[in-house]
Image: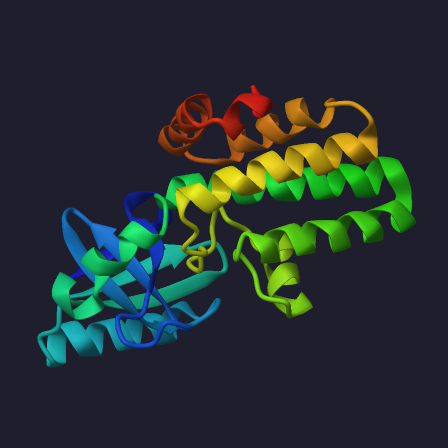
Length: 219
């Protein structure tokens, strides 16, 4: 049906309507909703073969998504089947989640670059506790590391974080980083990384920061 590139679509993670511990990647394009069927890495031919089989032979409405070093196939679904209307209210807009993750990763990198390995380890431990408190990650260190290593700009697996918890995290992150650095110089660098987002998403994040209580700390 469609062969699209990442900038053509919006991708978000929503909670599974039946299993609360599972997330469903959802792609939206021109008012239509698609669910991830398979990821093929760099193998374009294999992805194209599956896409053609579904569209030409089985009459399915599908998207073949081209990303750098990755191809994926998505099948069209009805909104009520995905549970998206019931679950997106639990997570903020995907652009905001991307922005918060970029800010978080920037601060972690700044601590490591300027304060050294020992302080970086302590900072990460403190940050992990804060994110557990906000229920953004589990007690398992792996879930925390996944957030630090995630590429929020190109990934199709974006956490479904709600705005209240992200607001809490930004306030606590600012306080923690200020304690370690003894200044707020990290804020400017953290905001610069938002330039990695699409212009619309960057504008959305900056506007949101101006509108929330803890966001003012990052102005």
